[in-house]
Image 1 (cartoon, rainbow, N blue to C red):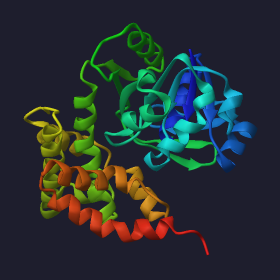
Image 2: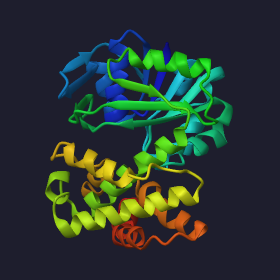
Image 3: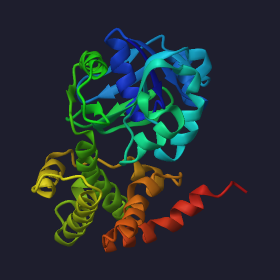
Image 4: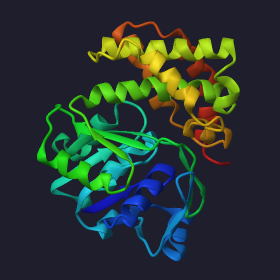
Length: 310
């Protein structure tokens, strides 16, 4: 399958590398020194599941050079969603599928507003991977899973075809007939993890068992669950317990990407991860006091990171 990885940080780089190693025709859409490294040295991956490298790789910062893709996998940070969607137009043909593996719950709609919802399929991934250096990815989680599905819930031939293609990576890949439920279930996890991790500036193992901090985490996840229900998505009754079990079994050194960005002084996904909860909470009349507090505490650092360099 001809696949374009749009955004090649931790997630895009890792999955793009696995897809290329599995024999797919993969092109990496990257930029800056990371692009230079990919072109000159290829891709190096350090992973708990085994290190590997891919060289040479096809990499460009101009989607028009990539040609029309059968599947475009969008892995850019959420603030860049619309920019990426506009830039990738030359890669979109009549049969091209566009799948987001981004955080949050609104990426599919934002992509569809630019490329057309008929091209968009929903996707959720569970993994911890980060860009360690130009051309170098480090993947640290035992779990690496992708769930995908049509936004209308139908199990179509293209979903089956894409699922089979992704399964060649050798990771867990599943099809769902309720991708909105999957996305909101993941959002319970990632919003709680990102919000509390970034607020405390601690690794997961340092805050998940502290009683008061764990209570804060649970309260934030409960707000997301209530917001899902108000948005017409019915989650499992034990979604909080399942999420805590997942967190308790995860590697203690894990940090969410939002936290890494804030600690490095870079713009983050605050608006898509926590700001979305506060905004939709007001729209749906769902109280979100913990999300409001986390958002207010993190917003000054976010605004500072967005300021143009002097």
